[in-house]
Length: 111
Length: 114
Picture 1 (cartoon, chains in turn brown, cyan):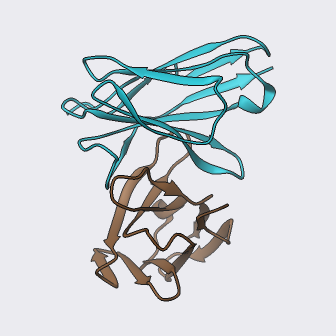
Picture 2 (cartoon, rainbow over the protein chains, first blue to last red; picture 1 turned 180 degrees about the horizontal axis):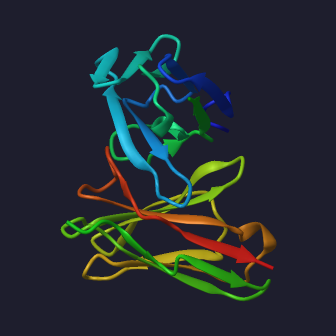
């Protein structure tokens, strides 16, 4: 049972435009969500998070939106830059449970 | 401060052998988690250790085991290797048990089983 789903394996966006990465979850107990970014040959690095008591969290060019009723969250990157090209993982957790990751979306930002 | 360090970075084994991977967490972090990353499967949770005790375990066979030492360093062992064990093994540390938030990942140990 895949509790966190990232249905788009890849996404291509032009530099300067908006990138929108989507994530769906099935576990209604999840109360905290995180996005990680991974470059080749490196470990994932934390990008941004959101608690279930919020519906939006912003950090510079990155904004995460949470729709609890739809069990859906999205990561918006505006404007997209070539350095944003990476694999993005969405993860959910509840309390002290381990993070459950999606399979990732590979973002390519084209100059 | 130094990040999470994993050794070795790359290794090649043959089926039936066993392997031990090592992880040194960020200084002061007492929680260490291990994940397996394979193409198309994302990051799958193996286990988490906190204060030398296994706190959580993922859905992997008993061939996968781990331990944590008093200095918070951790090792994971895979016995009787199978071709399907070829993967990137990632270690992550956290200041809190159960992760509960941000994990700090190492660069991983890439295992190839021939």
